[in-house]
Length: 404
Image (tube, rainbow, N blue to C red; front, side):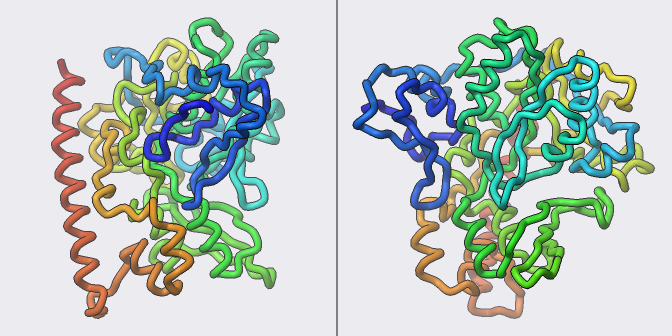
């Protein structure tokens, strides 16, 4: 039997699954709702290929040179693309030009029947399927194999995903430098929540279909996190965290993330991909653009510069001390909410306690008038203060490193 990454360190990238030629590895879910590989001992021939491609076991990262990283505030001049995007529409614009100019293939995460899966597209109308945030880990089984097949045919491929998925791809193809026709975009990842938590929320709130995780109904700058659902009776509703959406509040509190996300090898500078995309939180400039959304773009290498060298993208260089403070997952690989994480007990919690208890426990969205839960709220705030202190200390170290 292969010795794969542990439940604590496995990122769920699924490069190991695609590496198996004997169909002995399958994408599965742990008891607490996180993507893991499952081994069929009857089919496994112990060739070791899955161990070789695992980026965690081999600790081989394809990180870029820190000195090459350049940060920009940016947005697409195409309002239709920008409107459907999470922030400034940079991914959508790059994908549009990649398909129309290179006749290339774009790969990314799509929301399909309340699940998130990586798919391949090659037509402009399908770009919207890949746009927008999905606060759920994407199922990537099969996508690395498809990517490699396209690359070997000489096709241009733009692969997007979380940092661990980008590294999973690089580990799978073994040498990124062998494929000049491969371009990668990573989204800055908050960490991935449990699918069990997501499904629990759907069941308890009578949700038939999840439409989106974010939008710009109230404008990007005012905070665009909002779950839009169609309920089983056909009613469409939109819930922001302040409207007591259980999933968004729990996700934002960081107490139920994948265990590896609390100490992510890939959530720091230098980054893994050609381009890194995030919301430009904490922005002070270009106020006229806040309503429509502004992206933070980090160009990590020459391929990234090629992608951003686009007449349909407005870009302005920005300073690290301006763009990093509100984006800790760009520079800080550790999340100290792990001190109070329930990730390895979620199955027990969700099956044992009533919805009201789980809401308070996992979201910690508690009124000061609720004297029973108030001590717990204080504890969570103390943990939050520790997290902020650690983030500031890490940020100062990173800024010093970037200036040297």
